[in-house]
Amino acid sequence: MAHWFHRNPLKATAPVSFNFYGVAGSPAANKICNDLRTTRARLLEMFTDVTCNPEIMKNATDAYFSLLQGFISSLDGTTQENKMRFIQNFKWTDTLQGNTPSAQQDAVFELVSMAFNVAVWYTKFASRLAGKEKYVHIPRLITPAEKGRDLEPRVIDAYIIQCQAEAQEVTIARAIELKHNATLIAALSFETANFYQKADHTLNTLEPECSSKWRKYLQLKQHFYMAYAYCYHGQTLLATDKCGEAIRSLQEAEKCYSRAEALCKEYRQTKGPGTTAKPSEQLFFLKLGGVIKNTLEKCQRENGFIYFHKVPAEAPQLELKASYGLAEPVAFELPPLSEQCSAEVYATFDLTKGAKNDKAKPKEEEVKPVKEPDLKPQKDTGCVVS
Image (spheres, rainbow, N blue to C red):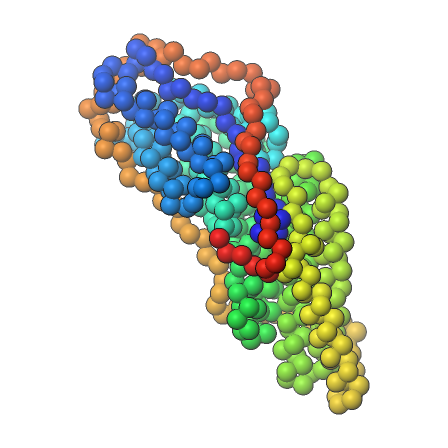
């Protein structure tokens, strides 16, 4: 699946020391700072560790987030802002903007940026959604996300919709493998194509230099699954003796498939962030071309010998609704606050002493990109579920 799905790069970040000498006024406070540093470093290591699995990732995420919440949540039972929220500066790159980072002195910015990266990791691991920060934490940011940045609503929405579409791809492949009825496969394919179209439209107002490659991928997947929808809808029509309409549906499938092939070439030639998928070389893609061709030839033969139906000029309107098999996002929940984070311990942090914090460097400074492992795709199978 490494070359079936387009993947934008992981976000990169500058190291954070959490050195609050003078401010941390007790051994317990110093331990929280040390644990924040080590759990953050451990979580960042997991993003590039090929042996990491969802259980390891969840444990590493929970370990860091349970401590980081101690810099965000109110610990004294009041509605006042946590006094530690704005003490540390954080720098993160964006998946569409190269290696120039955004910097904010805000623990909420760190939380949503790291959660975003965890979500991207899950898409790379098994095309799953692992974030709901858009609705809960992003509105709390003091500095709104700039246009085209990862935490901007259009980018977040596109990632969420793409994840749902890709999760449904696994369902479609499974339905085909288990030989479910053509009506269900057509409906699931139609819903999936609509997801890809919606994700593409979500990005249409972003700058082309950062979104064109991603959009080409979304467009080719939209046409590919429209080809699937028309192909299997044609099989349904043939089974109900509507041979002329079946031929027209399969002709439309052929047209969509040809457009998907053309978009594959355009996608490979388009410059932009992220890995370059090679869907047109995958068995799942290649098989569809043969299915369309063979089914269309069968319909034309039977129409010439049995039905003698007129082929409509217009393609059939697909009004398909899948009754089951649709993917639903898995809700992401933050871990409980670490037992280390008590009101008594945080009372020993004295902000009047002044922290020897990392000074904010110019915004133009480049953060080193994350070196991701090169996973070799498997060509002998149509679908692999990690």
